[in-house]
Image 1 (tube, rainbow, N blue to C red):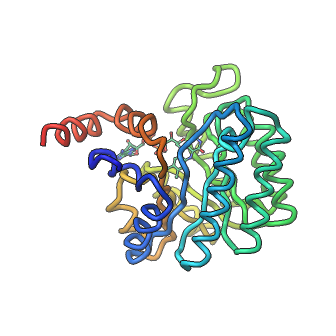
Image 2 (image 1 turned 180 degrees about the vertical axis):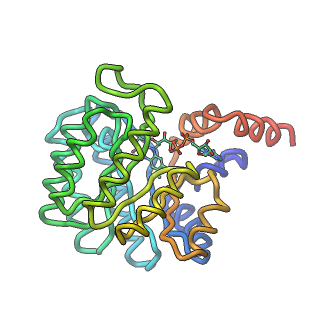
Length: 276
Ligand SMILES: Cc1cc2nc3c(=O)[nH]c(=O)nc-3n(C[C@H](O)[C@H](O)[C@H](O)COP(=O)(O)OP(=O)(O)OC[C@H]3O[C@@H](n4cnc5c(N)ncnc54)[C@H](O)[C@@H]3O)c2cc1C
């Protein structure tokens, strides 16, 4: 069982705990984006097992009628094995999602994966348009990728970027990443049908509200489980679409450490929880 200290950031080890977590959130008007924890598989059996779990999850979402969808990591369903393995597993998930009417997000991993991820997602979206892709503002190529994506049915989740790509292809300074984020956000509000703001940053969320006023483009805000939960609920109460990205599964330890390490307050939270 998940230790209480980890359950701030992770919903549980199995699908049932993840669904239970969603019921309370949905009551407060917040939708859920499930991510089964796991990445960088080099064994086709592991990639296939997680693909099957996502298919099971999609079926469970549709039978429960919850406001929930999924977000898949490419290397979890085969991208480290081959582009074809990834594309095949993604289309297996998308086929079931299309039958069941469940939205499918795809996370973006490090810079070496961007082309294969874009290609697989845009291909699948030709048959099932209810798909979204994460795009990283720290990547210098992103304005070009956005120009391509707005010509497709794919919805973009704009994030600042969690990886550390080489400086020739990415912005490393916080101020440059924030400037790029604002520029990309403005482009999306002007050219896309719907925008997903994947950020906890109050400045970016305010800017999205301003852009929405200016262009009328619908948008949603997506934040991680355990981060600014009150704000997620407040946004929903104010009538904004608010989604929580909810990781679950047995491989929670490294994800939990990442969340704890990224912020001083989280280290204090973990220390306090351990002491009590
Ligand atoms: C739903 C979602 C999905 C994501 N998917 C991906 C992905 O597929 N690929 C990828 O590379 N990255 C992904 N990310 C991570 C993203 O790239 C950033 O690394 C991460 O969100 C931190 O950037 P930020 O915009 O939240 O703000 P930051 O620049 O980290 O912080 C800006 C401000 O936000 C507020 N803030 C931030 N964190 C906290 C906190 N813990 N508590 C209180 N206030 C806080 C503070 O005011 C802070 O000054 C995702 C993020 C989210 C929210």
